[in-house]
Length: 131
Image (cartoon, rainbow, N blue to C red; front, side):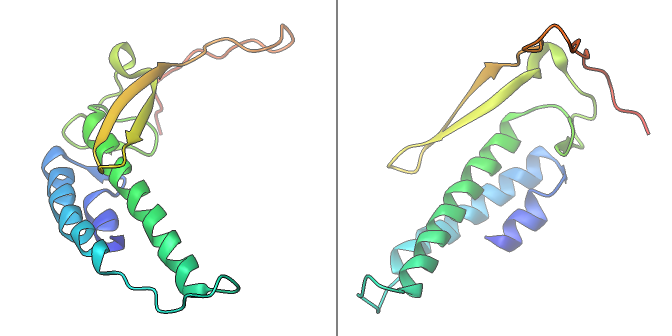
């Protein structure tokens, strides 16, 4: 999982690279059924803690891969080499991802609030980063 995320879903990515990462991820995900926790105690059970942490990391990796594939723009730490420009018309939103009990990912979005909660601070409109 770590190798897939570092190689296929790093900051600079493309549709093909992310898609390949999803394919590789599915192979790793299928091996999760083989996890065996030998320690059955409920106190200081590091085997159980590590299995739960792995389960959480696998879920986070899956939604990250699907989110990266879904967002067709470059913004901040998400740089799609096949979509080099920022696209405020379509993507000035918070990306939302849901992972159901069957392991299916669904995507959604929520608008970005462009106002502050006080009159003492004025909102700063979005602009393109240039270095």
